[in-house]
Length: 120
Image (cartoon, rainbow, N blue to C red; front, side, top):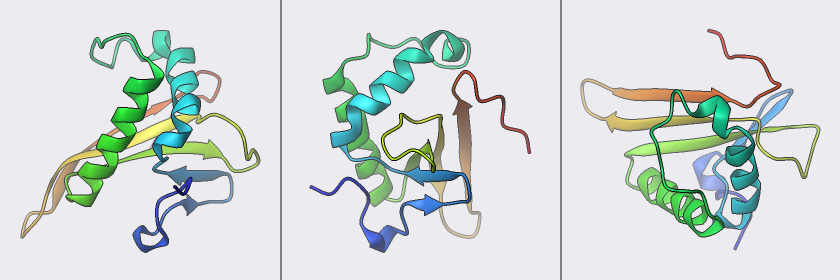
C-alpha cells in the first residue's frame, strides 16, 4: 500500500513550505500523535469523542478516503515540507460537498500548538 494518495487525485499538494495530503492508514501513528498533542487546544472547537486509539485513527483515515472517492468530503493534513518524518501541523476538512448548479461545502481547519493561527 502506498503512503500517499494516487497521482490521479492530484495529491499530495506541495507548496513552498507545506505538503497537504490525505494520509493512508499507515500514517495513523503520526496523526494520532498530532491529535493527542493538540487535544487541549482543539477541545473547544471539536466535539467530545471517544478516547483516541491507533485503530480508531486508522479507521477514520480509511473513512476519509471513502468519502473522498464518493465526492462527499476531503480531509487533508498539513505536513512541514522541510521534514520528511514529522507529524502534521494542521488539518483541513471539506465536508457536505454539494454538486450541481450550486457548488458548496463546509470548510473546517485547525493548526497545532506552536504554529500560530490561519488567517484569510
